[in-house]
Length: 196
Image 1: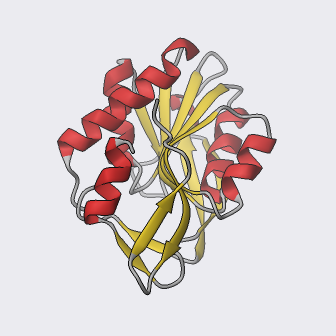
Image 2: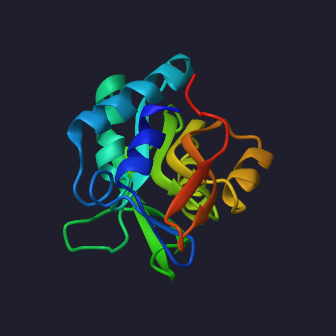
């Protein structure tokens, strides 16, 4: 069992509807030491990819992506879910559906932050159906950038997202892959340890 799986078992809360709450340490209140460990692990897995940018989506992926970008010594970009008055110029846009929020959003990234010379590592906290990742891949590829990999903290292995992304030929690494969850008993079962 790896450090993230242990923390999920200790502090994660399983809710009805295949929801795993990790807001006490990962995506609302953040354990910075844990974030640093996650950043180092993704660096270990993708260090040979020539990463020039880390890309995530607002909001829960930002903390993890910052730790990863710090390890690589590169900028982190997050796709915004709403256009604000301080965003100007041309934008890359993709529609994504959120499993957690049960809604669709257009996400945007300014064209000035991604270019064909970039080698992008996409990072997010959860992978369920893969919609957010597909949107981020679309944005990166619209810019002409190369997607060198996708790093996910927690993958719901019983949902289709991981299979879809892997079948598209992308290098996807998940630190904890959940095989099943039982809200009645509050239990989580993991696939084989995702960390070596």
